[in-house]
Length: 430
Image (tube, rainbow, N blue to C red; front, side, top):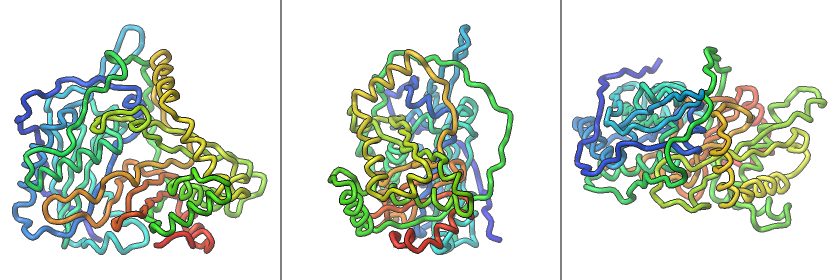
C-alpha cells in the first residue's frame, strides 16, 4: 500500500521586508460564523519540476516572502472572555509563523491521483492538520503547508483556518505565493485588511463546548466533469422550462445535481418519506454585492438556505428547481446583506454547525489553474479531509476552461446509485 513519509517539518515566518505590517485584525460577523467549522483544505497537483533538488528550499523562501504581504496568516487567533459571559476574538499578527511540511510519496504517481473513479484515500495524507474546529487557532498555526513529492509530480496543499479566509482570500494567497515563487518581487493584487464593517471587537455569547467525538460514516468522493457544452445545454433547458433568461449555468447545474442526490438517498425506502425536507446551502459572496475592494482579505460569504421536499425535487423539472435557486440568490442584495450584519451586531448569535443536507462550497470562479510556481500550471485540484461529510459538494473550474469540476462527497450507496442512473449520468462528461 502506498504511503506518505514526512521528511521534515519547520516553522516559516515572514521574511520581514514589510515595513508597515498590521498588528491586529478584529473579526467581522462573516469571520465569526466560521469559528465552529473546520479549516479550508485545498491542494493542487503538478507534474515534477525539472530540478527537484532545490524545490523545497525555494518554496520555503518564497513562502516567507509571500507572508510579508499577508501578516494575519503568520499570526494566531486570540480570544478574550468578558464578565457578562460573552467572548470576543481577534487575529494577533505576531509572526508566530506557519507550519511547512515536506513529505514524500515515492510510490504514488500523478496518474494514481487522476485515473481512479473515486478519490484515492492517500490524497488525505497530502494535507496537514491545524486543529479543528477553527477556534483551535488560539494555540495552533493559522496556516499549514504540505509539499508532497510524488514519483513524477508534486502536490502542494494548504490548510488554512477558515476564520482568516474564505475561498476567494484562500486562492488570493495561493496565487500570490506562486507569483513570488516565479521570481516576482511584488504581487499583482494587494490584500486589503481594512474591513470597515464595524468598530472594535464583536462580543457574542460563548458557545458551549462539545466533548463528543463523532466518527464519520463511510464516504466516497468522486470528481464529475461538466463540460462547457454540457453547462450550456443545462442552462438553456432550465431557462426554457422556467420561461426566463435569468438562470445561470451554475444554477442550472445545481438544479440537475441536487435532485439527483435527493432521489438516490431515498432509493428503496417507503414513499411516505418523500415528504422529508432537504436543505440546500449555497455560499453567497458579498464582495460584488456591497461592493468590497477587489483585494478584500477575510471572509465575505454567508450561507443562503433553500428547503424543498424530496417529492418536489423528484416531481418538478430542472427549470423549477433552478428558478428557486435563482430567487434565493437574488434576494441577497446589498440592502439585505447590510441588514443581516446590523442584526447580528445587535443580537449576536453563537456560531453553530449543521442544519443542511447538501452544502455547496468553493467556486468555479476561483483562480486555481493560474498557480504556476515556475514549472508549469497545475493539472488538478483536490480538497482535503477536514471538510469531508455526506452532502459536501466542492466546485472548481475545469483545467481546460469553461467547464466545472464537481467534487462530491456522499454515502457509498448514494453515489453508486447515482452512477447507475443513465438519465442522470447523461449530463456528465466523466
